[in-house]
Length: 269
Image 1 (cartoon, helix red, strand yellow):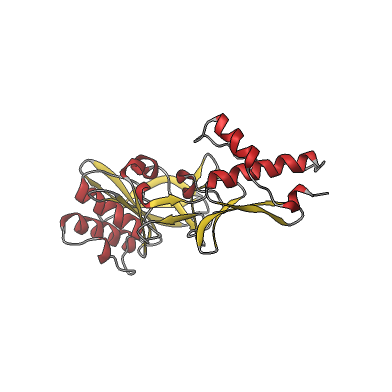
Image 2 (cartoon, one colour; image 1 turned 90 degrees about the vertical axis):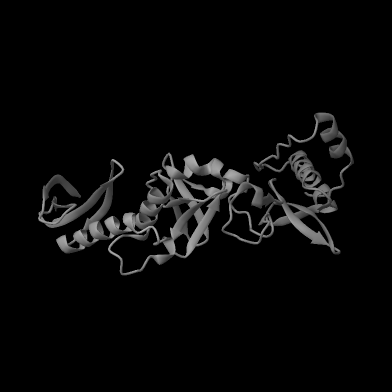
């Protein structure tokens, strides 16, 4: 924990502070366009001073970009991005965002540049993206929320199977670049006999394949029908039901009555 008391030092932009255990550390900050920007906390006065000098030079040297960041920099990579974006685009974000002409970049680290539609700018300017393995998420109301959920992608969806990035760039999350191939529970994209289609399956002491269908809607309805059949057979298990809004109730009823279900489901005991 840190003590809120600070004291100026002989170096510009550097303030000494004290942890609750009595140990000292140094804060660095500077002001640009009437905006007070914290550069971080450092163990020594010299390191904090270097951060202030680097930030001041970065503001003045417009030739320096995000790719010029070096590991030996006194600034964190996140602060480097924040300062360059403020310098170039006249708008301050506390998250590592850089605004482009048709989208914006969000840098997880210097090797990972995510791309998002401008419509998401407000959201990610106030939500920090974190990464665990291949999982990208934000903290929202005390919960870990996958960024894929904003596209209707299910938590355990597989890229290339349940959804694709149209341009082949798996870091490009612009809305027009995401195609959800499977938005329903128990349904997955599957090619059979060389033809694209969708497989419906249900888990009952193991996975049961319900069938293969031409569209995701048909597969989702088949899944719902399988749930109804299993419940009629006396199975006491709670299943999630697919809610299908893109067809009318009469069209749903017609498909439901005609759709074929695997005999393994029909004869389940």
